[in-house]
Amino acid sequence: MAEEIYNAGNADLENINAFPVDEDGIIQYVNKDMLIGDILKQYPDAALVLMKCGMHCITCSVSTYESLDQACAVHGLYTDDITKVLNDFLTQTLAGEAAEAQE
Image 1: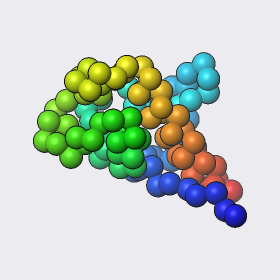
Image 2: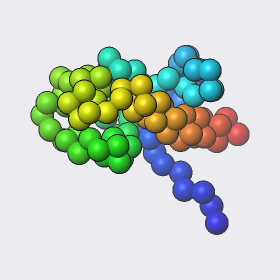
Image 3: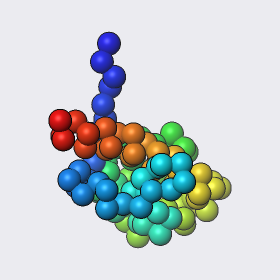
């Protein structure tokens, strides 16, 4: 059975190597200072991850001017953990799409 591939957003897959990588090899697509609205605009499937983490207000108008760090504080979540989960998800999906595009 084929592994399900998610379309994690509108990332520029040709410049995927321009993003910093942490010590675990996870590409840093998002950071704590990014606005929730901007994250969702660039990576629409990040909404799935945020909702699974307990951030069900992703469609709220506040998300357009609230940073990931601020949203985590409101929801009682650790920003570093959420950022790592988001970047891990995006690394798995977008890096896979970039590899397929190069083949």
